[in-house]
Image (cartoon, rainbow, N blue to C red; front, side):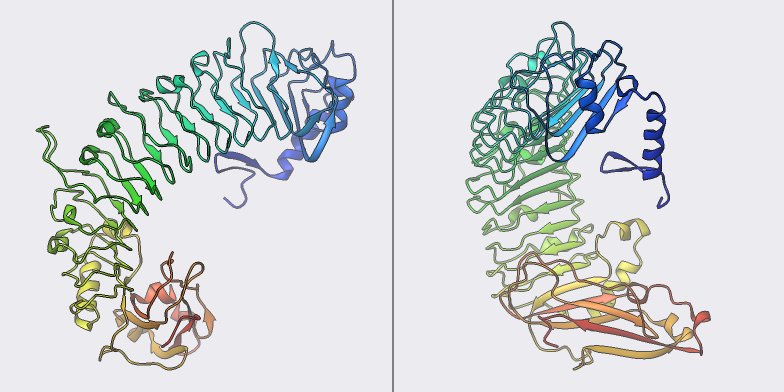
Amino acid sequence: MGRSLIRIESKNIQMHDLIQLMGMDIVNQESDDPGKRSRLWLYDDVVDVLSSDMEDCVVKAIVVEALEPTEICIGPDDFTKMRRLRLLILRNVHNSFQGPTCLPNELRWFRWDGCAPQIPKFSSGQKKLVGLDMSNCSITVVPNQFKGFQNLKYMNFSYCESLVCMPDLSFTPNLEELYMHNCKSLVEAHESIAYHDKLQVLDLRECLELRVFPNELKSKNLRRLHLEKCTKFERFPDIPHKLEGLKELYLQTTAIKGLPTSIENLVSLNQMYIQNCKNLEHVPSSIYKLQSLHHLEVSSCTNLIGFPKYEDSADPCMKTGLPKLYSLDLLGCNLSKVEFLENLSYFPFLERLYLQRNNFTSLPTSITKRDHLCQLNVRKCHQLREIPELPPLLNSFQADDCKSLQKFGDLTSFRHLVRRKLTMANTSPLDQKFRGYPGYLITLPAGELPEWVLPVEEDSVSFMASEDLYDKFFGFALYIALGNGEQTEGHPFMLQPRVNGDPRSYLVPYFERFGSESDRIWLEYFEPFELWQEVDFGQIDGSYAQFSIALSGKKVKK
């Protein structure tokens, strides 16, 4: 792949410089006259063509992407004379002619971002335009009627900070993607988005003034809806009928107070993000009817009055709530109870559970029966008093900064550690693939050093081992005492494994989003391969090799 001449990165086609130069050379050989070449990309060639008689112009594509703002004089009918023009991309190009610009109906893709004062006009009649990109322009109004734009599939008005209204989409029946994010003056979303049959992506994120939205949503093919950081958006629309298209819903940092009961009609919803919604008070129990939901985040919603319990449905076909949910994030919601975890018919295949910064005092004992749970985080739950027996496949458990924690059983015992690793070693490769974290990790409030731990005062440890002895090693446990302090970026420590002095890949711990207010311990179990990777004893001079681990980090105490 490193030698590929053409590749796809982030849905964009990238080509090697040699391919680009070869294509340019082929076009330049078409004619010495720029107007008789199929493609133009040089500023001087474009100016030359625009200032000449274009009766014999054969140009099909013009792309001028200036690094700095550049002026070109474009007359009102200059482009309409280019009857073969199909692609027109202007970036950082300002039209020195004061007046509207007209475009030919044969044009398929038009992009003019950064400098366009208004949307160009088109000739009367049917338009063949497929894509329109006017992002980061100073336009204030989009024409209400895109009459004749039957083929338009893509529109982008993002970062048009003066834009105050959205176009009527009923005249673009085949539109599939509409991007208007960061239109900071946009107040109202047009009613036509509610029932548009072809719309698949609607991106309105960071439209800070957006208040008005349709009362109902009926767009049956809508796949992604972005409303994050629309800080004045207060009411999510009702879903009167089942929508099988919507898979991703983003509502972070909005002003919503709740979700409608009809949210259950988003039958194909796969991901839902409701983060930092300070006005959110309730989530309806009908959320359990979302049979396709994989990831649910309701985090930092500080006014949430509990997470709902599952209410038995009258639907005889529905036996479990959220049956496909594998990740549930309820960080920082001031939850005083987690009763919804007691019933194992809720999200029976849950793999990741994030409950940090809440106010509950205990976890239900039934959590030990959640056989698929591999990550559990209860950091900074200051009221948590005890920890029950943990699920068998859990490989990451973080409970540091739990100031009231009095009992955590034998979590730091050697017996528990070995039993846990044996259980994980006996799981299928498919189970191990989806555990999401290597080895076995626990973090807890600081305590006494377990008897089985060999204390090391230095910042490294090393030993010699033969191939026969190395193959018998079951694993290595690292017990690290960490001090308190903010950890807003980076990692609390790093490990540098070496074999005979040759460094292996750095190992860094699971990223901590928030610092710790008190001392804590970090206990992590590694298999030899996780530390030193593949060791070829045949390439080592002698029968023994030296294995070492160096530890570095400002928060490390011992």
